[in-house]
Image (cartoon, rainbow, N blue to C red; front, side, top):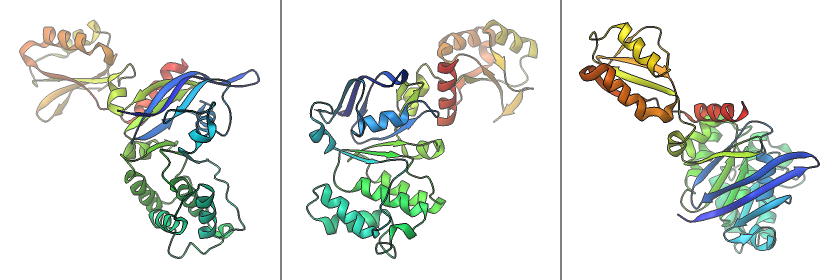
Length: 316
């Protein structure tokens, strides 16, 4: 898999404050990537450096093989960026502004490109002639997204793109972004984790200026930030609570369910523990329950659960 972005030992300092500390990661081509982290984690500084708006204090960034510091013009040609505040000129009409932006980007067929992107972002009919100052926040966001999608930049960076959009608009923009999968790399920063989980196939989690983990949700789930909610499925009515308590005590596990519950005819005991010790737990369950053991598993993690687990572990 080709990496479109490579970041090595990136740092950013504002006086004595360290916003980013020796950050290293890469982003694969053609993926929709979610950048998540709590407020103050360093997301905005990272996005501004990647987009070429501010310089790094140290380290290197390359976009499609072009070093951002050594060859900024070539690297920036590969990037489109929509900032969180999404500044727009009030005095221009929607179509006029996007044609202006297309011309600045050196797009050959300005009219066709602008019409195409306005249709994609649902701002063509009834909107293209309106003054930007008269539009709602939601329409402003769609104009910003349309601007970012103009051209054929390899990396599209969107900072909080769905703020102010109503549910119908979010669905429309989601479909637009999904259609770009495989052709361009999208890096999306958002606090709406459920939305990122729906469209992203790769994640970068950042906290306190450091990258905690990168990869698909499945990869992250299998890594050191595993969900610690597990379960043992048993033949019902064959074991006493004392047998179950002995197993939990031996493995230093905390039982979650107040009482044993029936699940599809089986007895499911949920507990919390270290997911990295799954092999040990499986062996212990086999030793304790023998033929009455039907299976041991780990509950699927949502992006929110992974995020909370990750940031909690690295903040403690």
